[in-house]
View 1 (tube, rainbow, N blue to C red):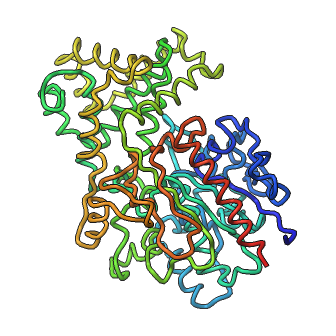
View 2 (view 1 turned 90 degrees about the horizontal axis):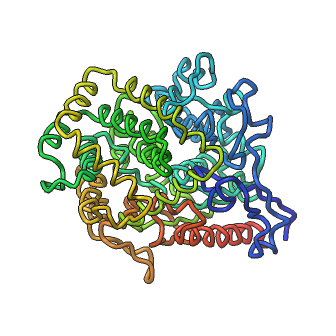
View 3 (view 1 turned 45 degrees about the horizontal axis):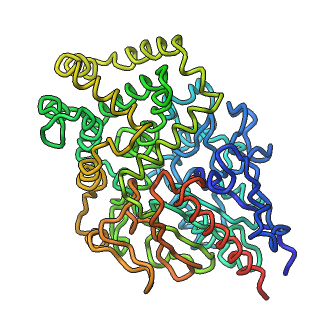
Length: 524
């Protein structure tokens, strides 16, 4: 073997699969990696070379994550900006033209000079509000992008989950097509594996779907009242929710999240984590904000690159043009296919129960913090539209709605089978993951409706999804794949947990990929 050392970076909580929630596992000591252990090292984002000295980050908890998700959450920053930073020069003339087009503010608004600099300006930064950042910020050393970090730790193997898979693919595209066209002798990115990633976008990031998804969220929340009407939802409340916008639904989710966050009851105090997760998944439906979810919008993709000029150099459109398919970078892709609502509820239950018994969260069960929760809940509802909605909701169904909702959520921690699984499954299928396609993407709709074959033995069933992303949207086109697999045990939440069957299969596939990737570069 050549004397190469590969740096492993994780993206978007993929580290939870290999290292555990609190980095308690020693991934590199796994017996399956014994033969190549001396060739592997974990990346360290806490390195002073990679962190801005003025960034308001007291402690980097997930230091092996390339994309920071701590006090500053780079998850929400547009993909082009966080990957490129201020890197604006390349040696190849054709590649320079492509790079200039990507950095053109007319194509990617985040590169407008004042906007760009503001990502590293922390004056007045207020952090997060219920896990959603008040403003988008980067914590990298001044104006660095992820690609510049990777150049300092090359060669790198990227292990990516969810949005992180698209980030890894885009970084590999930047290397192959712009910065390092002949990478065989000196690769920056030796390979990447994406799991449960929206590689063809997500219905939950398309504002055109906001109305159907909004109604689906309302239906799912109100389903717990157990009234015998359409989808089990009181008709008066259901009619009222039709007049709400997606921003009102977000505010309602914040309302419930804070209410449960400061609940004195075990389990309910951390049920807010479940609401926070779904709030995060659907953030892209709100067209008022420019953020990373804009890059997951399927309407950015156009066949034969014949779309509007402003989306021609978008992340998804560039990656899905045949001339931009990867030819030098080995990759692997794992599509989650577990769309059983009972399993997503179990996985969310396990997440929140684990946090419930974490000593760091016990203070939330005190009565003092419960009173704070009531005050914060009132503050959250002090907007005319939602305040009137809250009063009306209180008046119309005070006893039935709140009593049954509270009881149903509490029962989650005892028996998931109490939930109206069949009706929730219909809501997911007919509302939350129904994509509005136009003629440009009719082939994608057909692949989703009818399923598709990855190989003779690996088939994605019709209308398969992982409760956040359609399974066919998780595949990556191109001939350079070491393997593409389907994980029938993983939903979008359980796939990142090594304690679940889906996460355990992903863990095995990660090890297989790392060994195959090292062998690919070390062969004679």
